[in-house]
Image 1 (spheres, rainbow, N blue to C red):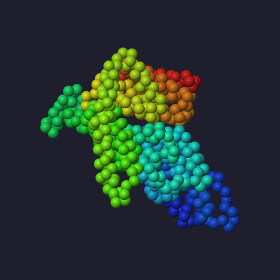
Image 2 (cartoon, one colour):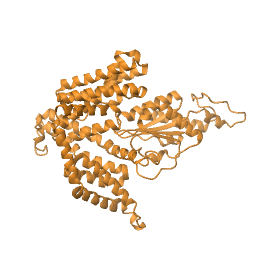
Image 3 (spheres, rainbow, N blue to C red):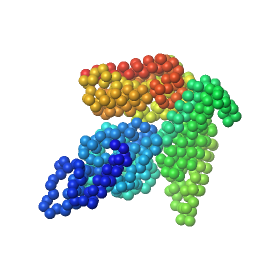
Image 4 (cartoon, one colour):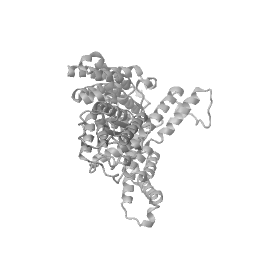
Length: 518
């Protein structure tokens, strides 16, 4: 059912429980004792209505994990006989739950890896706050936990003060955990720019040829009937989108640290990083510095008369000046040289070294199936192609990363097809969906299998990913697009060898899973 229909039914059920003494028709009554003689009729209706939960799911990319966690929680809610409504805060935005549904809820579940937006709406209710993978792997346990908290009368306080990251998790989180969330905050906002810009640039090359990056601006010359003009148009739109990658990364790292005041110095620092050639590394550093500077300014005791102009004048002015000075004069050049050294090293990779890098990237892509380690490898690859004219090594790395990321779901799909008896009915159904998810480069398609049997599925997936990463680098396949799976095969250099590498890794993963389970 749609969220609106579920929300309407929850609201209607709430009205029924309030306005009438009769039990709600169809309400879950399992385990409910009959009321004592003389007990108020309202208590009977309230006891018979289902336990109500509202949930929020989100992940750094806002694609697979967000919706898989939502589906998992909804299925577990139906099995447990509770009314559970989920707000998915994905990359395409989110539709807010009806305030009446939130007000009527008995408990809240947050399953997220980035800050929950507008979290204050859920304050004052029993709350379970976990990472998004917990929502996928153990939804039943989360539902039981929030019910237990409700029975004990535990509830969250009104909104905790602090930055988005500080409001995301539990109090007292370690610096390492916060740092990961700050970086993931920047990556989550950057990924849509990577996908849009990268695919547009790749399509521009496919239509207009590899010299299209030298074409005149389409504002000066555009012929509606000329294919090259359309290729130039797509390339230049994609290049414009790519121009935002580093500023967006830096801006939203700073936002994760210091809330809105961090956006201006973060974007400024990111733009300076692009200007001086510090690239992706410079963006990371600029974002962290911007957030730190803003937090330092906010700790200064300001006279009341100046507090009104602090957010709009003083903090943006001072923080941007400090970040700009540091990036231009102090640390920008060393970072730029480090970025150049890394690029030169990658461009110099060949033979055994390139194959070993492919193995490492393949292992990382398949280790946690869309988690932080997977994102590190993916971000490393996309950073290499996030320029108008990426080097050959950067495109080989992107090819290896995407190929390896396709292997886990494809391997599990193949295994469920070959040896059905080793898998449950639900796993066989998931295997059918895994064909499409794997082909589309959505590694998370293997998560249901890994959650049920991690000690067999994850090592098998890593083995297949390592084989595919190594073969892709050995074959010299290249890729300009940052996403798309087999649907962008026409943009891949040496596509038949590329598909052969994926097939080999898929066979290794499927074979190992079958042997280990057998």
